[in-house]
View 1: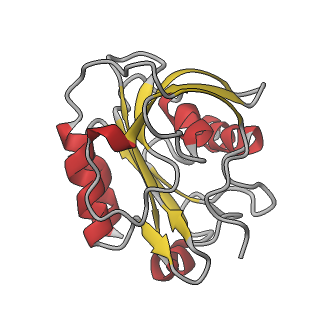
View 2: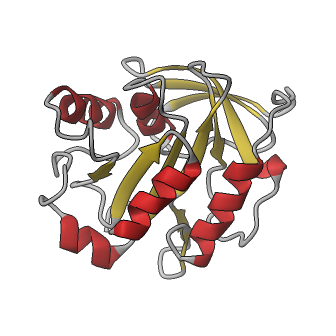
Length: 197
C-alpha cells in the first residue's frame, strides 16, 4: 500500500491567521456522516487517516478542507478544517490558514473546483469494495499517477476535457487504492452519488 496521508505539496501554513467567517455547517455534517459510513477514517494497521472533504468559499478559488491527519476523529469541529487561501497547481504550492494543516489531497480538490464554478462540494472517500467494483468502469485516473500531485490535477483535467467526467460527478483514483471522489453543487448531490454506487 502506498504511503497514505503524506503531504506532497509545498505548504505555506499560517496557523495563527484567522480563517474567514463562513457557514460550514453542511461541511461538518457530511464529513461526520462519511465517518459513520467509514468512508473517512483511520487505518489502524498503518496508523494514518484517509479520506477528506471540502467546500468552496464564496464562489472563489478558495475553499475549506478537512485537516491533515484528522481521520481518526469521529466528530470534527470548525477548528479542524483548514482554509485554502491560495494555490498554484503547476508549482505544487498551497497557502493555508487555520489551526490544522490542509489535507494532503488539497491540490486535487483545487483541480476539481477549477472544472466548473457550479461545483461547491467535494468528497473523497476510501472503500475497497466500491473501488474494485468500479475501477476502469467509471472514469479512472492513470494508475501511474499518485494522489496529491500536480500530475493528479492534470489527470482530473484530462478526464474532464475528454467529457468523461462532465456528467458523472465521480472518478476512481486508479493509482490511489480505495480512493473515490464525488462532487456536485452541494453535499447532498455529492453524497448521493456515492450512495448510488
